[in-house]
Image (cartoon, rainbow over all chains, first blue to last red; front, side, top):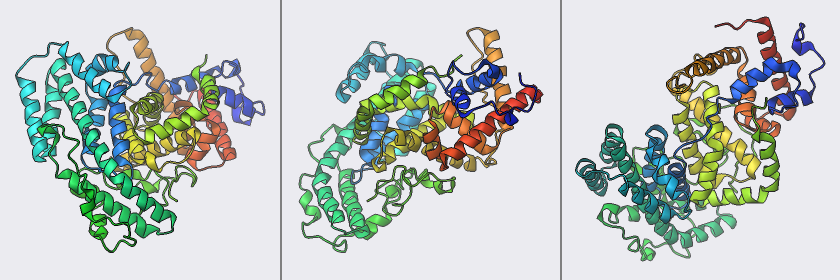
Length: 311
Length: 198
């Protein structure tokens, strides 16, 4: 080992450093102690994530419902809780149903696979089923907070099989929500196209607000639909969209009430902190990460060309 | 003694499959589960490890928040796969800052090494040694400046290239090079000076 101050040594070239940092076996053995340090640091990385498919389902749902103009309340809230649960609760789902379902890429198959897997556990009657029914009832009533508390309690306090069943139910609920979101999305698409064109034509910030207004209107409408507990009726939502009066000739936003919708844009009356995500009309110049609610703009700051989408 | 045997492979694959990756981002934007499964599988380890190496009290939990935010905001992301990696780490970094603030911790504080290492099961002696090794590594890490730690965490744990790291840190490549050189020099000096003990 070099007894002298190493960083004064001219022998450490950029290439040496790169070799060390990339963990290359070509790195000189002269730096065995550094290698130990870097290897130990690299080992802080967990090897394999668990619950990949559960997370994937949840994240896909979030991404879908976060697209501009998409109904955004329920699916994302459900998915948010799913993500939290996937991160903190047991691994049974990952080891069983999801592994099975992972062979099938189609979302429908995934949910089907999870469902099927639980039959093989011979999961008992009574307790959990009853709780799940209660959960559905609460969701149907719009009492999401209590519903999730209930289900989380089941997940935390039940035995593995029951806990997994509760989590599977959550997944299925999210799946249903996605379907509803998709329907809403289809309905919005036509309007969104109009809005996009408006923006291209230089309508600018007002056009954005207007777009948000449209999204919120559709979102509000969708909220009034029967909840999933009453059966999946994705076909019912709002093919009569026209009544929202979103007109071909609706240039500036003053005709519709985008103001009020825009004001309600932060979280849309929900207690979750899922606001601040929409189309970013007020934060259009930030870099996309946007700190989520508690002021993420204080960091050293990423470069301007990362993730900037706004046109 | 390669701590990242996949690294070269990844770099090579990355250029070969650039198109696939771009379409993966597009698929992720439209909510395709396969794309999110891939992204989560690929980034989960580096992100969680990054947060842990930066002293996050609950890296797994924070990591899930990072992914959630990535999913929410991906429709606003515009760029290739390499930029995407940087972008994800920018989000991770911001979440970390938020988390620290809400925990009322000093911004550059690493006051403990992770205690969630499972000592039960397996070879106990080996586990204990690994634990001690980690503790020593964290002691040394604490002697570095925040920027130096950041560079090492992004490059070693986050698997980012020099350029990607520069993008995340909003610095020039040359500045990142200088930082990593100083970081390694400082680590080396600490190791040789024997100043870290347990």
